[in-house]
Image (cartoon, rainbow, N blue to C red):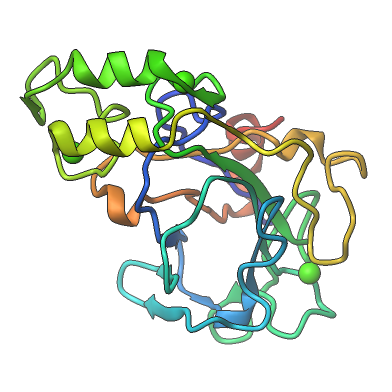
Length: 237
Ligand SMILES: [Ca+2]
Ligand SMILES: [Ca+2]
Ligand SMILES: [Ca+2]
């Protein structure tokens, strides 16, 4: 039986402050069959980012086992939900390359994977609102450059590895603002948290490398001998 684990970044449950995130990358631990329509992104402010396809650039690298979805514009402030199809009845479920086993999503082989994450432009202290507190925080880091302190990746709201007046303006211009109330619905219009997938609320972000293509979940298959380990590693168990 296959399973998966996530690799978490710094406080992965908290909002992401970056203003120019536009790419979702999903890295697998083996070669997979995956298509553009395998992924759906929904939100509260924007109910559906992927249907119909707004011009997403999809690619899959069969050497690094990484799927990339480059969206035509940066994600706005929103509460978001990724759905990756893994059900037998889906149009293009993710499966091991060559017609192998279906993806192990929420509860077992042949189920979707769903993951929440929040974006709040300028929320440098990641407390769920953008205010003068964030403006003061960003201001206190000017000038700084990665990786020398007081550089802070979350105060570098345009993700260019330096904190400057540009980040300050971006933060101030988004203040005050808040995350939307409510939860994103999945593609079937079901509130997946209320439907029992509370364990999927936790998001898994890797260490920041390139903010403009921020890497979100790391997906892994495990063979039967690794199953006990992978269950323990599951970020939302
Ligand atoms: Ca599905
Ligand atoms: Ca804040
Ligand atoms: Ca910057």
